[in-house]
Each structure stands twice: as structure tokens, then as C-alpha cells.
Amino acid sequence: MILIADSGATKTDWGFRQDIKDRRIVQTQGINPFHQSKEHINKVVREELLPQMEDATRISHIYFYGAGCTPEKSLVVKEVLHTIFPQAEVEVQSDLLGAARSLCGRYHGIACILGTGSNSCEYDGEKITANVSPLGYILGDEGSGAALGKRLVGDCLKHQLPEPICQAFLEETKLTPIEIIDKVYRQPQANRFLASLTPFLSRHREEAEIHDLLVNCFVNFFQRNVMQYNCQHAEVHFTGSIAWYFQKEVKEAAEKLNIQTGKFIKSPINGLIKFHFEL
Image (cartoon, rainbow, N blue to C red):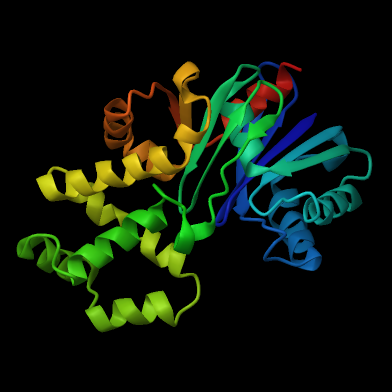
């Protein structure tokens, strides 16, 4: 049996597949070796994943794709998984390669992740051939939930949006300017806080100013990232919650730049199951 994982900041999707009819997906909390110890990762797998499995000894191959899985940090995850599944061959790769394999399969294309953060790459059907560093939500992460929230907060507090929208933002989020400043500059995980504000953008996306904000943020993502690849001769595919819920605005931004969009998927796990089962 093959076990495939796609892990982000908040959750990990685990997919099992025995044959063409036997497929199951379960979830645990997110695993990120950049922020979590080996002991913590071990605990997550043993206490959250194993109880959802019928027989761990049936696993012959594990393909784990995760945020924070750099070449160095991937060894931490690989060691934990090999300890728990000693009979299995284990491969640990980045979430970006997972997105590319899920979206593009074995064909050339450009794969983008738009979630709390953002990332992108050019992929040749086997490996990543180019990657513009996302740089995180302070210096980059254009088009991400954190970037959208950051732009929304800045425009509201600097009165760049109409007053009714600014007032609605504070009322609907039940936040004050002082609380926002505290959460961004003094509390941990400011990127998650900023990304948590995107439902307001979704609810008000028909307002002209909010529509323009969204499209401009996605144009910025294309210009600073995707257009550095060979995007004139390849489809650009997307995964992640922001890409999924704001497909219309992403496509509009792409059209402004004559970029051809392809697939939009909420999560890579089903595409990864298909990719590995067809090996």
C-alpha cells in the first residue's frame, strides 16, 4: 500500500491507495520540520495518524510533501517515518514539488501555491527547474492570504478605501486599530492573522474597490514571480485556498497580462495519489 502526505501549516492530508478502487484520505495536524522537533512530529504520526490506519505494516512506500522540507530538514521527517514504518521506502520532498506533481503530472507547466503564503515554480514533468523565492510575507508572498490581509489592513487604516468599507471591516472583524497593530507587530504568527482577514474580502468582492484590490494583488504576484518563468509557452496552474476561492480574480489578473491559466485545485492530495499510483 502507498501512503502519500501533503502537509501545510495547519493540516496534513494523508492518502492511502491499495488499488484502483481502494482510496482513502485522512487528516492530522500540520507537520513542518522547520518549526517542529523530531519528537513532536513523532507524536503527531503515532497519536493522530496511526489510530486512523487499519494496518501500518501494509505500507510499502511513503511519499511525504511538506512545507519546511528543505533538503536538510527533510531528513528529520524521513527518520521519523522510517522509525514508525521500518518496512517502507520513504521519500520526503517540498510542498512545492508536491503541488507541481499534482497539478502538472508528467508535463511541463508552472505550478503556484496561493494559501496563507505563496510560492511558484517552473516544472519540466519530473523536477522543478526554476523557483523565484517567495521571501515570506514581509518581503514577498505576493498573492497570498497574508499579502491580501496586509493590503486590506493598510488600505483601511490609511483610509485608501471608502469609509463605509473601512467601517464595515472593523465592525465585521470586531477589531480596533490598536488591536490590529498589536496582532501584527507584537503577537506571534502575524501572517496567519492577516490571512484570517480574507473572508471579508470574499464577502465584499463585488465592491469595485475590493475587486480592484484583489486583482491588483494577483497582478503583482504574476509580475514579480510567474513572469520570470517561461510562462508564454506553458499553462499556469494553482492550488491553495486563496487560489481556489478567488479563481475569478486570479483569472482576470492573468488575462490582463496575457497569461494562460490551467487547473485550480483546493488541495494537491488527489493529484498526488494519481501521480504515484500511475508510476
